[in-house]
Image (cartoon, rainbow, N blue to C red; front, side, top):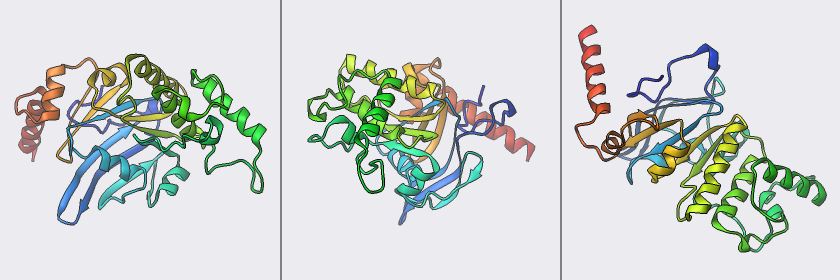
Length: 273
């Protein structure tokens, strides 16, 4: 079991390499420090929830990993080698897919057109049959509840739209997928549908980062819960850990088991210095 005070998992030869590994990643915007010395590991087939209050740095970290922002310092390793995520296309090329909260779907197009938007098969013409077959295959692998790939996106529910966005992200066979507030504004049934989707993605052996404010959803699907506060790591939890301690780490309450454990570790390190 990982040290609960550190989101960087100790090496385990039996697990191979993390799909992504961050060490001392910082991001500054002028004089403002949005991220400071972030450490994070995500393993294949693992769901890591990234939680924190507004302004904690979650969106900035996702955009760094998606290639939207470049880190000011620190290293990012992907599948064991150091990489530079210099642009969104570079992140996609490495195998990092992101489903942002707005989903970026075209409501006037059908499901298969949205899945392939900008990635049409064939250099000179559209291979509509192959696209439709591949779209159905992806949706079936996700146990999607969509009646037809020719259904207009405008007619789909919120959960079904999230399904289309996730299927689109899987088209290029990524190794890591990031989901930004995937259950926001969804009802109970649609939320259950999306959580089931996340389980299907995990079963494909992908690393998954879920950004969410909904602690019930986080506990239902995450293997580890990484807390950010004011742009810094502020503890790692499992779904079985104390709810009060998790909320205390998010809000910055002084007394919680994570802060006490971190203080003991720091004191021990000083004692060995």
